[in-house]
Structures are given as structure tokens and as C-alpha cells.
Length: 212
Ligand SMILES: [Zn+2]
Image (cartoon, rainbow, N blue to C red; front, top):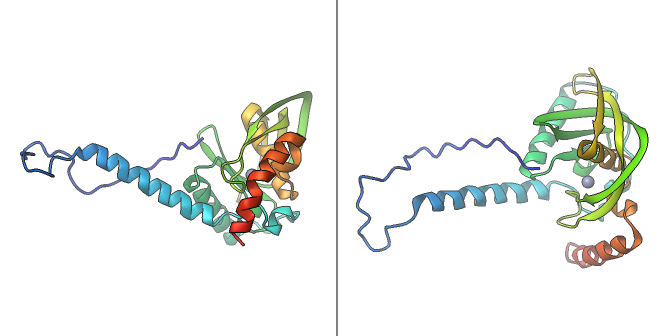
């Protein structure tokens, strides 16, 4: 779910083999400290990304996005920014409405590849559906069961306007159905069962008060 490529250049040598760690307070486990720093950096980046993603209660998440008409430089910049945010937030998918932009597009990470889907059209194949837990970058850590079609076809365009046709199933099919919902102002809280909705609302309400 969060397979970033993050190449770090620490700019200094990890091998302190020549030194004697015989001074009190100097015999750290250097590698552990670095792992800790890396994790802290990723967490900081995640917080920054999440602060740029609209959260539940924001009216833009309830609005229908409009068709994209121009495949221009601006669209390319937007999709790049969204792809970066998606990775920093440790998500696998992000819809334009989640960054406050009412245009029909989303980015998603599928089978090791970053994809951009503009003006997506979803067709359900077959009759099979299944229930599984879903989360959402606009709902914090809350997860809830959602029923989705198992097999779908997704048609649309990439950021350059080239036609995209994807036959998806399982998790990928689930992810694109979640995103199509975002572009229509729908969220998983509308799709889950009544008990899970009540539970989620109970967790969301106190947060809405705090962020006011
Ligand atoms: Zn979502």
C-alpha cells in the first residue's frame, strides 16, 4: 500500500568501525538512530501531505467534479502534484476533489505504476460483488466495510489525452470505484452498512468540533 521509492543520501559514512565507543554517552546504535530519523522524516512528510488533503466535513468533498476539457501544462502540473501528495500521504489513490479541485481526474498507484485517469468512465463487469474494509485519506484512520463490484472496466485518458482502457478486478477495481465516488461527491460513509456508519460518525464528530 505504501511502496515508495525513497532514496536517501545521508552524505556521511555509516561505518564508524575505526572509532572506539568507549566514552560514556557516545556509544549509540548509529543504524537504529538513522532508521528512527528516516521514519520521523516520512511521518513529517505524511503530516504535511495530509494537511493539504481535504478532510471530512469540507463541502468540496460533497460536490460533483466537472469534465476536464484541456490536456495542458496546468493539468500535467496538477497530476504531478497529486501523485507526490498521494505517495507522501502513504495512500494508493487520490482524487482531484480531495485537493479541492472540482475536475474529473484521479491518480492511483497500481501494480508498481503511477497512473493518471482523466474523465473516467466505469463499467461494472459481471454480477459478483464483495465486502471489504476501506479507508480514505479524507477520513483519517477510520476504516469501514464497503460492498463493491469485483470486476470493472475503466475508460478514460492519461494526462496527455491518450485513451486509457483498463480491465480491473479485486483491489484495483475497488480502488477505482472509491475514486469515481469521490468525483461524484460520494464517500465510503454513504456506502457502508448503518452500524458501521454510526460508529464512524461517532469517531468523526468530536474531530469536527476540534477543527472548527
Ligand atoms: Zn477516499
